[in-house]
Image 1: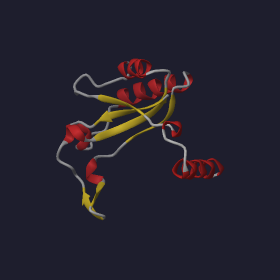
Image 2: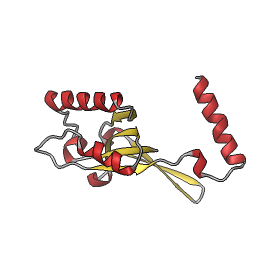
Image 3: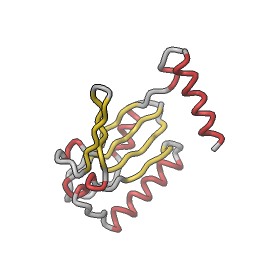
Image 4: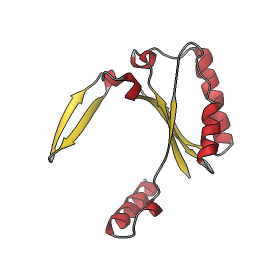
Length: 137
């Protein structure tokens, strides 16, 4: 099962405060453990929402809003994609994540849909076609 571990933003991450070298090193070692265990498929830190935008859809129209966004607790500062046997395993990995003792943080874990979760049909076939194209590139 694949899971997305979502690192919630903090006032510090939204202010663009960079992690200390010690925390960066600890995160690098943690990521190395994830890779050696065959858990980590992908991951990245995200820059503050001030450098982002939101695209909203309503009634067939789109509206773009440039960052920064006000509700820090609703924002994301980074993510991992993990392959785990269960949600419990993903939670255990998240508990081991290094953190700065001076900052309150939160990781949200969500299971990803797999193509097999959807009813067979033209829509699923289209997604298989795209997956094949991605594998070739």
